[in-house]
Length: 293
Image (cartoon, rainbow, N blue to C red; front, side):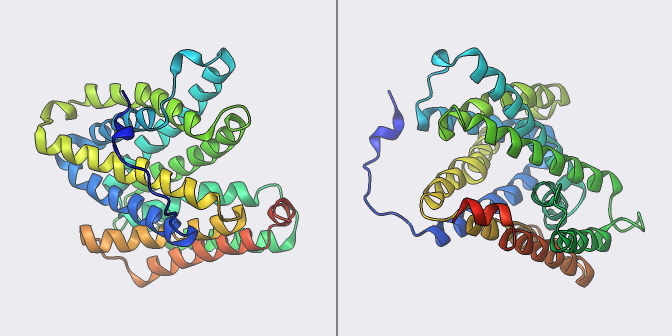
């Protein structure tokens, strides 16, 4: 029995831009809630709850039949899910040590580098330089101000995010997007949960923490993924990417509102540089313009 059948369907479709904005707010609010769990469950325990419950929710929502998958689909989903799980686990280790806004800004360099790399256009090199300036502004030149391990973890998460995008593009060619994400989340669970178990964080789990874990899974996976699916039916990939560039700024605001993580003027300038580089690289991308023409 599919629990989602119990809810009546509505013909109302949320406009694309509000849908993406709500998705971004949902993801970053979920990340803020996750940080509340770190002192009790640890980063790996919190990641285990998020990934595990996300897998259950997505499998139920898309009604994915794991037994119908062929060997090729399973292999690609395994790689895709491994990147997804490792990305989330490492990112949680990062934001345990550094403010959420800075963690997302550094992590965002992964997909931004993927968009720019290989280009020989002078304009794209300018966007890369602008992004580099943004990272230089928050680099831990003085290790007393920013945790170096946290910065390195965020950078690693960004690299895994780029891998996740590349593998996701390959998987989407021979699987439905919803099924690919649901199965990938299963493999991510298999990777992440052992870290949560062996760290001892899950031993402190109780009813209220379990509910918070479900909330994190809904806010960071189920709700935003559904909103993004709705938006992508209405938006070009270029406009969608521009809106996604707001993630670092929303993360910084979420950290300020929910976690009282205050950033310096230099750190806000860094976030602005990364967002401007992302928007510029997207708007002037010849490849994306050709795809949407």
